[in-house]
Length: 264
Image 1 (cartoon, rainbow, N blue to C red):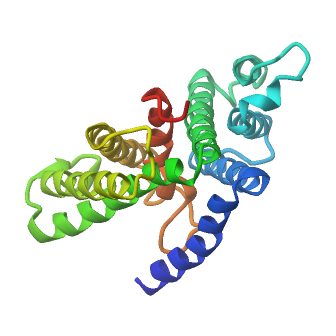
Image 2: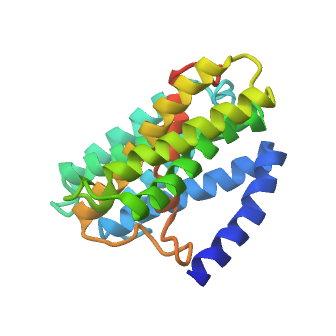
C-alpha cells in the first residue's frame, strides 16, 4: 500500500501540472505513454521491441496520437488514418515474408492494439486542448468511479460482476461507483459552471454514460490480461502495474467524449 501511495503522489505531481500546461509538453508525455502502452502489448505477445512488427506498432501508435493538424501539410497522406492503413498493410505483408514467425493473428492483435491505444490517447490530448475543465470531466469520472466502486464493493459487495474476467468486481461496487462519480461530478460542474455549454441534466447523462464506459474499459483490459495470463500489463508504475492498467478506462472514455460531442 505504501508503494502504491508513493507512486500515485509522484505521478500526480508530474501529471497534473502537465495537464494544466498542456500543449507540446503534454503531447510529449502522451506520446511516451502511448509507446509504453504498446510495448506492454508486445511484451504480453512475447515480441522483441527491436523487431519489425514492434517498430511498425510504435510508429502507428505515435501517428494516431498526433493531433489532426499535424497531417495537414504531409504530402499525399493528409490523414493519420491513411498512414495507419499503410502500417496495417505492412503488418499483413510481414505475415507473408516472416516464414510463419508472424501470423495473421499477430497482425490482427497489433493492429487492434494500435487503434485502441492510439485513438484513446489521441482524444485524451484533444480533450485537454479544449480546456482543463473538459479533460478533467472525463478523468474525474474515471477516478471517482474506480474509487467509489472499490469502497462500496468492499463494504457491501456480494454479487460478482464478471467473475471469469475480474473476480473482485461486484455489481454493488459497480453501481455504487457510478452513483458516486455521476452525482459528484455533475453537481460540481453545475455549481461552479465549469462547462457552461451544458446544463445539469446534460452533464448528468454524460456522466452516466462515461462512468459505465469507463468500467467496461477496465473489464476489457482485465480480459486482455486474462487472455495473456498476466497479472499486470507492465511494471513501470510500482504498486499500480503498467500504463494500460492505469489508463484502461480513459482509453474508452476519451473517444466516447468525442462521440458525445464534448470535444467539438
